[in-house]
Amino acid sequence: MKPLYKWAGGKNKLINNSYKGYLPDTFASYCEPFFGAGAMFVWAYNKNPNADFTINDVNIDIMNIYRAIKNDYSTFKKELNTLEKEYISAKDPLTSPKDKDLEVKNKMPGNRKDWKNLYKIEKTRRYYYFMKRDEYAFNYSGLSKTSESALLYFLMQTSFNGVWQVNTNTNGRFGTPCGLLKEKTSIYDRENMDLWHKALQKTKIKSGDFSACLSDIKSDTYLFMDPPYRGCFTNYGTKDDDQFQESVIDFFHKAKNKGAYCMLSNRDLGDNFFENRCQSDTIKKFDITYTAGRRKKDIDEEGNETFSAKKAVEILVY
Image (cartoon, rainbow, N blue to C red; front, side, top):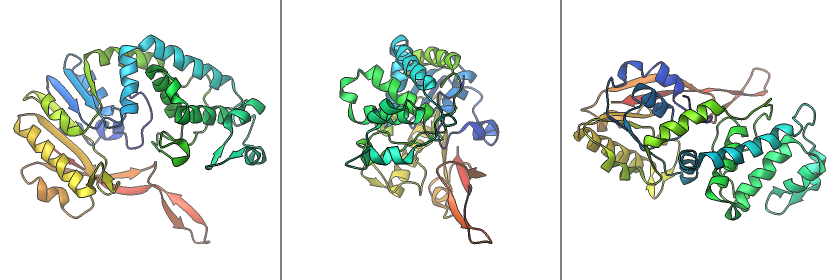
């Protein structure tokens, strides 16, 4: 089993390399309050499929994808397969590149374009993607929860590089641009999704504030916390960044006091923020290079703009 979709900031590489010596040998339950794509869940399930699992994320739309795969799998697959068939049959970027003039002619108020009309004129994958993104953004009220989740999953699978983005011109809903649009025969791994359907049968799926997960923590729990990183967001709900991070650390210590094995992932800004608040814990640091969503702009010797991956330090508290 592997994660269901690409996710900027996913933990696959860290789990397989940096985290190896710090992962628990045994546990009877697993809890992940900030779920994302679930790379650590995959590790935990492969380690002990008989454990009890709790997953949570404040992003209810993503968690509804997992609910649909758990509870309405045949309908979810049917909807997704229809989207996949229509998308794969459309013209790819090599046979039908972007037509800027045509898109300008189909501009709409509010920084939008008439993607439905564009797709009617020329059935390209680009126009199909944005037409479906508009449908998800503005016409979702007419969809069932399962259909809405299948549509979002389709968009996430064909969007740019695992980035989650919301825009004003997508009604405050998923607004990531399309990806390379070069898929050959399929947009998802059917066998892997079957494995997820099985794994989720023993999984409690929640979609609220992470603090509500404390009741799911026991002395035999492995808790993994991968919150929005410090310095990446100015706020989370009604709390500013450092207040939010302190509430995460407080949750971590409450779970630790229950006897759980706890791991907390974050980013080190070099100011001893975590060292000062986690003096009774063990802290490890790892050099890492962010390749998605965290680009910095440089100027080369000839004065041209260049983009390079950004180096940073990840911190693991356990």
